[in-house]
Structure formats: C-alpha cells, structure tokens
Image (cartoon, rainbow over all chains, first blue to last red; front, side):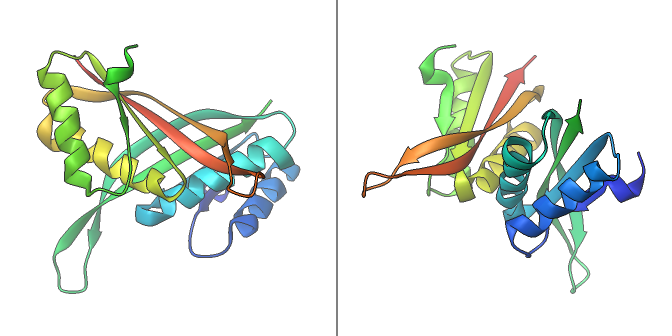
Length: 91
Length: 91
C-alpha cells in the first residue's frame, strides 16, 4: 500500500478528513487507510462512517484493526496508547 | 448471542469495564461483545486492548464493526451517532 493512501486523524474538524478521503478515491485510489490514536479514535470512526455513507458511492469497510502503540514521552518514558486502523475500499 | 455477554461502555473508568469482561470470561463465556457510541468509542478500544493484552489469557479480537445509530433527541429530532462493536473471544 502506498503511504499516500493513509489518512492520519488529528485535531482538524471531521469534514477535513472526509474531504481528504473523497479526494483520494477521486484520484483512483482503490482503498484508503484511516489511522488514529487515543481520543481521536472516535473521530476516525465518524470520518469513516460519514465518508462511506454520504460521500463515496460504493464504499465499504474492508477491515478494522486495533492495536496498542508505544509513544515516547518528553521525560524519556514510554506511554501505551490505543490505535485503530480502518480500511475503506471502493468497489 | 446472549445479551448478558454484551458490555456497554459508559462514563465509568476503563478498569470497571475490563473487570466486567474478565468476570464474563471467568463465568465461561466464549466471547464478549463490547459496544460504545460517540466519544466513548475510544474508551471501548482501550478496554478491549487492556483486557486482551493484560487480563484475559488467550483472548483475541474476533471482529470489529462500525455503524451509525439514530439517537432520538429531547426535542423529537434524531441525531446520527457513530457506534462500534468489538468482539473478543477466548480460545
């Protein structure tokens, strides 16, 4: 998978990411990976659901995985943070 | 699936739900469904990851699905809210 097909969810509003997904599918991507960590996981699900149901015709969820990432802190310690990856595909 | 095997994630702390999952597996449940809506989706992923990796030996994620639920508001209108269901199974 090309890295360009991955959308990392941050603090922008939901529609910014929906637009990014629509753009990738319009550029003939077959699938788009949506990734998020921590509290942003809820926003990733919102983005996937809105893109799939309202903006990308024929899109469906191909797979979802969850994991635990190690995130280095400023003081040198490591925090564990939950992460999600949602794969949308267009048929 | 028996309804008793479903854990609905609310505003309690993460470990309360982890404990509920451990209890269900100890009562010989083969699988536990974790459900959450809106901002609580992130907490559901935390709960699943902590239960799986630290507290339930041999547990793994059997499947994850996302959806959009219609939630009635007080004024009679209907809001759309994202939802997640994570199925943990013990082998």
